[in-house]
Length: 90
Image (tube, rainbow, N blue to C red; front, side, top):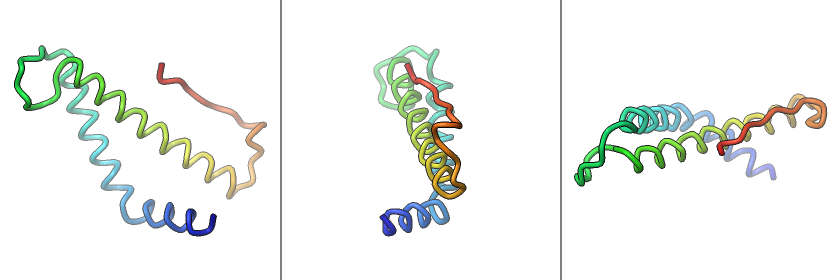
């Protein structure tokens, strides 16, 4: 468990800003392409593919937020049964 925490801390310190920027860029491109018709080319995100990529990007962010929340609960000692929040991607 300690190694898991060390790995998460290292990612948070060294990689999180770049990961967040990449996810933001991918999400923006996907959202921009939602209304574009699929034209058969493999360049850019359009139509159904754009929607699927946007959904995946939101899930990545949601998983990261949940991980941060669990970490905060453990570190601060907040009773998880007392403080609840959640959301559904459906």
